[in-house]
Image (cartoon, rainbow, N blue to C red):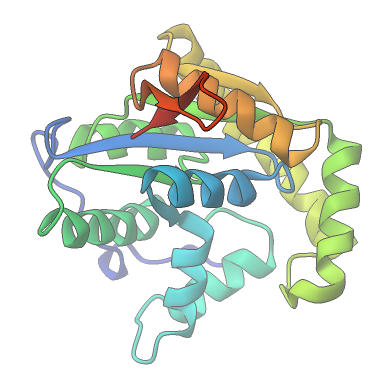
Length: 233
């Protein structure tokens, strides 16, 4: 497809990040398509009150928004299994964060499926807000493919089909894994196996959140007269 003219893209010119850690706690959530990112994010939202921002959902909402100047462009990129220009994705995420912290300064955000390329990672931290770490769900390709094909039977998503899935896997390996490697060298990656059942995966997620100081331990008294450990935001 033809490149989108730069004049149609949002400007990301800024000399320093718009926000700091006091304004928002940013956790990137990465993993191949079908690794279970959305499922785990939903559990963290329910238990700890995280704000879940799915880059993919934001783009799909924007492509269907009446009057959007980016809608047709986003639709074509998603259909082709390609990555939407970072200016659009970053601006949509930034707008959501800013809206939330107007009334909830210091909110904790899970940014799901982002950054998918090195330029996105560097630009977001340069102009929006530095992340505290990346939560990476590690999952074999055959497992992810099986999950996506099953989801495609009911999801209605145009990209939950064998052809699009193959493109998405290739894109993830070539463009997103370097992002994981980059943050891992900085000690900013929490890697979690996404192969076990969702409940087991989530228990490991909680343990890692506690260890990283994002949520805190507390002890609750239960009827049997024993203490049990629980995590709280």
